[in-house]
Image 1: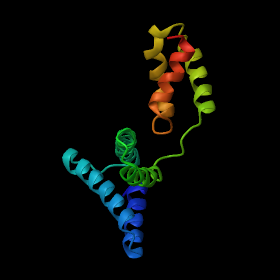
Image 2: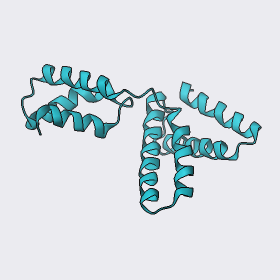
Image 3: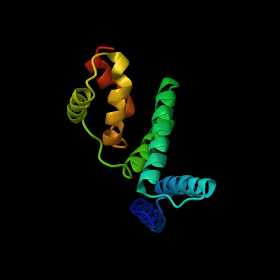
Image 4: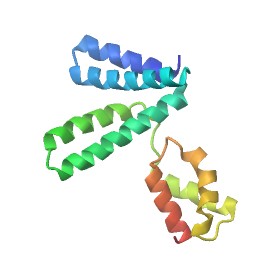
Length: 149
């Protein structure tokens, strides 16, 4: 069993014993998403697979928060933010912008990229290094700035 799946099981047990209904619901949602993927793909997910699921769910929460804010539904925003915070506990520590810029510089130098047309080559080098540790939109934005595109 992967380390993250064990951590999820422990979080679910702790929340249930403490009577924390919200955290119990969040952990059950995540557990259900992991089990669904395992059953659909007939695999036993490792930590990388679990992280991808958590990232997808976190992105959905961020999108929901944005939509609810635009709709003036602060009650729903608070719930989504709480679930997002729970999900982020299962993600690796996120890189800050300075770290991302440093890695982008190295990737641009390594690929020999000169313009926005070379963005694919840079991203090919970058993504394995930042996958799960940085927001893809931010990485994309920094690469575009660097390549002048």
